[in-house]
Image (cartoon, rainbow, N blue to C red; front, side, top):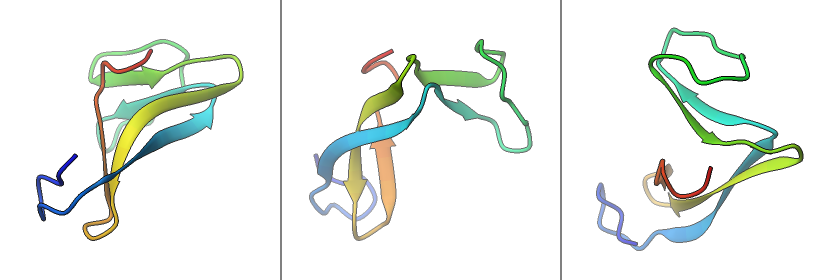
Length: 70
């Protein structure tokens, strides 16, 4: 995948976390088990949550597809 910011090649990998991985709007503190308005659950699991991601070493950014694995 090509980085949309600097156009360099991105490295494919996995974004991982324990049990639940979620994105929440800045300023909102969320630790509940279920998705709330303004929140996107990226992955869930009993063990380790994993979702495909692409990393740009140059820009230090990670890009994910929200719908890749739930």
